[in-house]
Length: 274
Image (tube, rainbow, N blue to C red; front, side, top):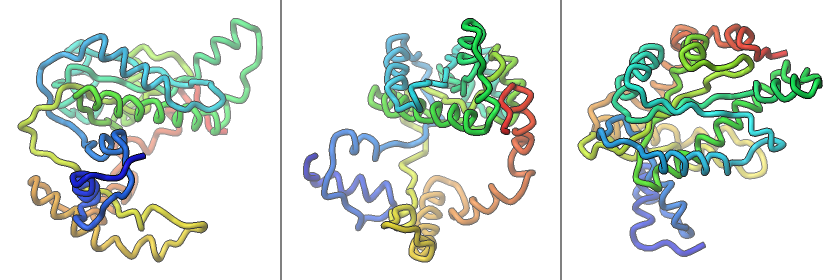
């Protein structure tokens, strides 16, 4: 741990949209993480095979429940396949433009194959806990990958819309049963002309509780956060405060983009939720 220099409080303040917020302890890793942002505009420069291998090595270094490592990742570079995947994922054009599209898969089929080869049962995969375990393992691995790729000068954006049509995604990628694409990650060298910045996050008072959960204290800072995020949106040609976006995104099944049928799709993929 090191004490902050004069630039670090500014970075932390940008992260929260609050110039008064400062960190009194930091590290190069924390400073790197404070600069994270989603990238949706990429240069045509390819991601090298060595960069991909390094990113996957970082992903493999993430924590994993019982060392099950219940995840896989499919690296897609073929332009036509990226176009087809984009069509399935709400036609988001940056999927096509990114030189690399990583599809992160909760993969319990590896365990099923082991059980089949060894003549052993694998009944626990029929329970929600196992599906949740696979999703958590996948998310931990992917977040490790994002930190790593940003350290290499690459940028990325997560794509949850791969869950809009999970069975068609599985067909396009040749996924085995007992597995499902959890999210995608468009990866490439950031286009420096993209109009984007570090989006302010909820204040620590909203997410950090001491000993017990205090909803009143946590929500007290939300009006100020709404103002900060609305200002960020205005600066980048967007509209709306955080409260509006949360309520719109969670208003009902229609806002889920087809994901309201995810439970049934998971069961058909061999991932029931008993």
